[in-house]
Image (cartoon, rainbow, N blue to C red; front, side, top):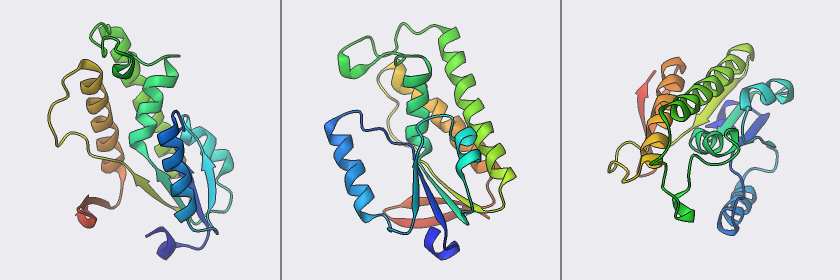
Length: 176
């Protein structure tokens, strides 16, 4: 889609190589990305940073909101709300204030991104995942993440002119 829409594609990657497996995934992704695309790696404050670095891109491909929300939950608080990977309490002791602050930061990030999109003439393709179709997570952190990503996806989709849902690699147009 990006290649068909314009010649000057700016790929904005939100993934962070926090472990060896993710670093490997990122390297593989870089290998298959078209060489002519310019890449920016921005893990948070995407709208703000992109605004000053967008240049003359026809297309901005942002991959992805899913990792951006995760980055906010782990970076903006200086530490994760809590971490199931370390055997901690998986968010069970998070206060209502901490959760409200996380939601405020996610929504501010999305509004800032949408403001950037509105100020630039090029087309934006924003990738995200739908994590709310499966089982309800068995821990509080998972439920907080699922809910915040759902709210972020809703906000982006409400303002988008077109929305596609990928099912088994097949794009299904659900808006526009």
